[in-house]
Length: 243
Image 1 (cartoon, helix red, strand yellow):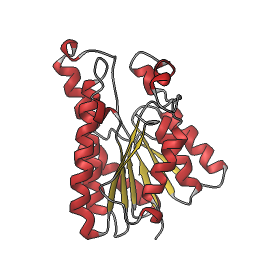
Image 2 (cartoon, helix red, strand yellow):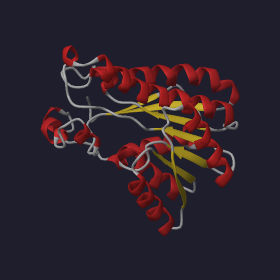
Image 3 (cartoon, helix red, strand yellow):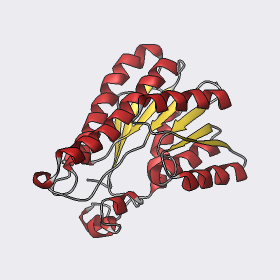
Image 4 (cartoon, one colour):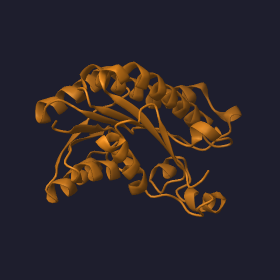
């Protein structure tokens, strides 16, 4: 089976690291992005310079028509999509729940949960026997992220539920669905929340006494997609340094 993977939010951080790792393992990689065109094209250039195969496609994966187009364009370029990494997501400025607006809460859940739902649904309709999906959740789905990101945590908990439920629906079709739950990882997303150095502030509270790197998460994602994880479905790998 030729391996074709869509990585949503693939222009930076965990998505970019995952795209590069999968390309090195022989996947044709579709790097999805919404607005970060240059970052996505930079990842494509790095992959192709090393002999890999990659394509950047712009799509807002919280919008149904964009998701359908993303899969159609991927298939036009590389053939049947066989794997999916649901990595796209947002968070906003740190806040206690009592100060959050309903608009903010709705927006975070819409982007993070709807993108997972829409891409997973399209994959469920298209992936072949032997295909696999990995959803990038967060340790926040277990902790609740109090005083900072309860809305984000809620969206990731919803992703975990989708992961478990869909894994049971697709098992009979030979399609595996698993999740990873990163903790404090050095990515640009923390700047979106207003604190670029957040990992450094929190690392002493982590049993391993350090933040994680995107490449460490990418390694787990790649394993879950691979045949080495052929008996794993509905499972989660917590990657939070012991938290």
